[in-house]
Image (tube, rainbow, N blue to C red):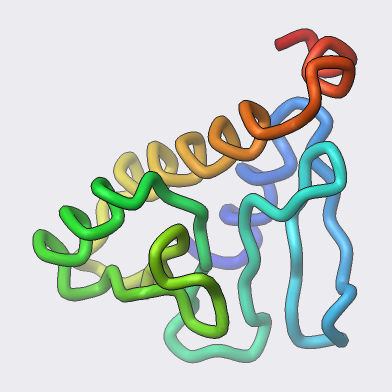
Length: 117
C-alpha cells in the first residue's frame, strides 16, 4: 500500500476527514473530530499510527515485526505500522477499520447517530 491508496482507503470511511494540524508532513484522518489514523508524508518506509484495542495491540506487536507501539502516541492504545512487504494490504485495511470503529464507538450518542451508527 502506498500513500495514495492509504489516503483513499481512510477517506472511504463514512464521514472521514483529513487535515494537517501538526504541520505539512503529517496527514491526519478523523471521524467526529477524533483521530483514527495518522501518517508521516516524508517517512521512508511509509508508516501509519492506528488506534487499537490494548490486548489486540500487544498481540499484533508479537505477531508482526512491522507493528510497534505507537510513535508519539499512548502506547497502550496505539500502534505504529510500518507499511512494507511483510504486511498484507488486507490486514492493514482490517486494522484501519478497527481503529475507525473504536473511535466511532467512543463518540457521544448524538454524534454516532449523525454517522448512522
